[in-house]
Structure formats: C-alpha cells, structure tokens
Amino acid sequence: MTDEFPPGTASIAHIGIAVRSLDEALRLYHDTLGLPLQGRETVESDRVNVAFLPVGDTRLELLEATDPESPVARFIEKRGEGIHHVAFEVDDVAETLKIMRGRGYRLIDETPRTGAGGARIAFVHPRSANGVLIELCERGTGRHG
Image 1 (cartoon, rainbow, N blue to C red):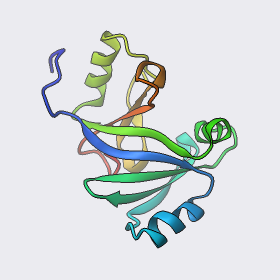
Image 2 (cartoon, helix red, strand yellow):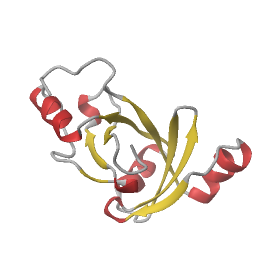
Image 3 (cartoon, rainbow, N blue to C red):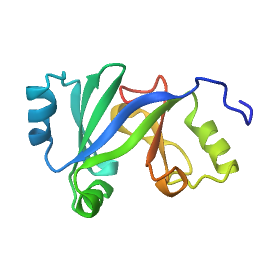
Image 4 (cartoon, rainbow, N blue to C red):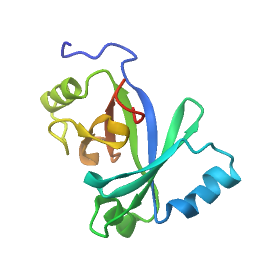
C-alpha cells in the first residue's frame, strides 16, 4: 500500500452507542424498532458487553460497561449515553495506522488489537479526528468488521 488511500477503501462498519443497560437499550432498538439482534458478547479487554443490530448496510453496536473505570463507563459519566464512536472498515488496520501516524493523527492504539468478534481493530483519538472517536476495523476478520 502506498501513502495514498485508493478511493472507496473505507466504509462504515458500525456506529457504537454507549448505553447504561443493554437490556434497556434493546427494548428500543430490538423490541420497539424491530432491528434484529445479531449477537451479544463480552469483550473482557475493553470491559464491555456488546450487542450488534444490523440496520441497512451497517450495524449498531450497543456498548454497556462492565467496570465503572472502563472507557465506556467514563464516557457515560462525562457525556451521558449516546454515540460513542464510528467504526470504519479498512483493508489493513496496521497499514492504515502507519499512514495516519505519518500524517500526524493522534492514535489511541499504536498497533491493532483484538476486538468484538475477533476482529483486528484500533482507535484514533477524537482530538485529531474532528471530535469523533474513530475505530478502524479490518475487513474479513470476525463479525465485527
């Protein structure tokens, strides 16, 4: 891969929504709006329970903290429930991080790590991304990306 991204190499994988309670949030998104529940899991490394709901060509990822000191718990304490991050599918997370680092973007993850569904993921700091926490997900890895 060169320093230039080919057109169309990224697409929205999912939108992460921080919630106090997955069960309560599922009452809205699944029971009331009728979005199918694709699955639930716990991601110990991020200290969250997650639920995935496909909607159109993307998915919602509901995030419930399992630890009051987790990033999602701190997010909710500071900002309340709501959109936590936007995840983009990319061909190669490591290469995308290298390009972004070279262009001066502030990274939360310097190297890819394992996220929900076994996907390779990494986060870009919102201070260098117009106030939006960006997650990069590698295509073809797990259910996540």
